[in-house]
Image 1 (cartoon, rainbow, N blue to C red):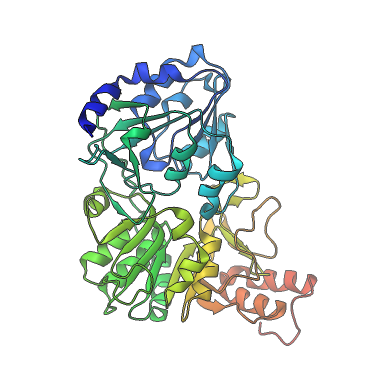
Image 2 (image 1 turned 45 degrees about the vertical axis):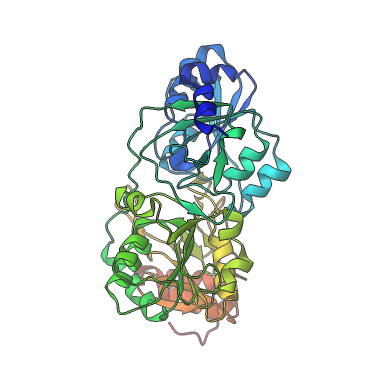
Length: 446
């Protein structure tokens, strides 16, 4: 089969490719780093010709061109699976909406619950000699999206890494309707904030709980990055990686010689991820690296797969929590922040793993825009806040003031433990609230 001939026959311009989109269509921009670039610009140029075009995207790392115009919402609607600050800005314009989900379910959504996308547009690396386009840093759910999309347009970006995978991690040219050779934009740089002193203290509390041979999952943010730095500097050895999102911290741990994957039960010797985003350090490291393997998120985030690896360690962030140990990692009251992602799956999977542990981490307090100190440990979640991880599932909770295990604790024991994690300025008021709610014993420590 002459794949190069097929390639040339399907090669076109972005302006020509997007002519297939019509008013009322559902268009999919794929995921995160793979969002289209030249195709997005070409679609934005057609704005005044179109109405009610609904676009699925997620975890945006740059503002889509279709969302920039003042009247963009009269022509396009942005629907996000998981949100960043960019997506929240789109929502604020009144043209964006969020779809709740456990990330592990997304491939099934595309199989069973959503109508086929009228047009799918995404960036991919150059085609290989077998006629395949790698899904690169976003294997996630893209195979299931492609399987049902009515039309598929790929935009080539030579800067995207090619990644190896277990299954469903590439698209064959026979499934592609049009190919656009884009301007090869630089990949977005998602650098982690420098760890704060609080992040460092939390990381130091977690590190002794990580054994040699542990299998790691890290979330996003300064705190997981701080844990990664400590692991890279530690004496730990033979670590494995099985994670929803691959971040720069894993590269640092690998280059420090801590990762071998020898003790993994599943995918021995391989670092497995569902999506990746970071800096050029990450993109260069995973490019055609046989030690790093992409996989659909219904595999990476499957509780049964997670728990099959012994000593699984899951480390994630939260926005706040209440004295019942309910965890909110998605909103500030009714103001949307992110999404469930894989937190719930990894909390459950880690605990089911032999020797496994899950950690939910947060600073005890924060300072608001007016300079007021606010507690992240609340009597109850604020009205409108989302319970990402229920009290029945949570295991370890960590702030800079300590680490507690919620398993087996009754309501007053939980309240007592969580008050001990709060900033000292708020402990007395939390005790009073716990007494009002009937979850504080008079003999509890004060």
